[in-house]
Picture 1 (cartoon, rainbow, N blue to C red):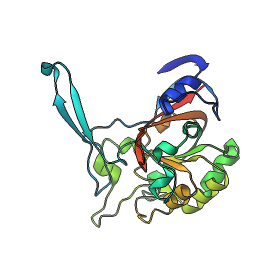
Picture 2: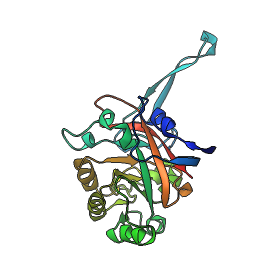
Picture 3: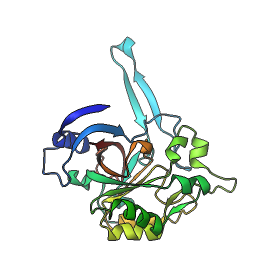
Length: 256
């Protein structure tokens, strides 16, 4: 979708919070927008042990209108992890400020590594190599690990990649890279897999580090091939469920 060049502050707040305008921390202009969201549907992958998305039709046009009821866990599909997900007393979804949800993107391409190793962990050297090419990660950025895994989303078995022993296999961040990104004062991290931690580590150390530091995370991102390494700005519209530790999100990337 193409946009004529204009200042999108008002649009950002309509998408991100549905509240009155405030001053943006990261103002920007855009010509193009990319949707980074997987649509919700009943055949989509979901975390083992939880439940699938369910859409039930309650009324149809023979009754004068169509209406549905949705049932879903808060961690299905493209969604945000708020600090409260792992940090007791941390901010919930609705306590994330609108300005927190309009952020520059730093996209680290780890497709080659992930293609060689399903359990690949983003390394400190991966981050430093990105910085040598693009400059230091800017404070307040959302750092996204692009694994290429989102292309498997239409095949839940391949996307979840669970072996016979029940172990999941997909890439994620290493503890060391997460600690480095905290030093860079990022807003949070994102990925195109089920979890920021690699699938074979259910102790969730990266969740504990990032969310414990008050940052947020975005999981199950889509269409990362369409993003530049730097220069895009994400607008994250979260389903505003009070006291929720996670919630579904519509995520757009705006680019010049």
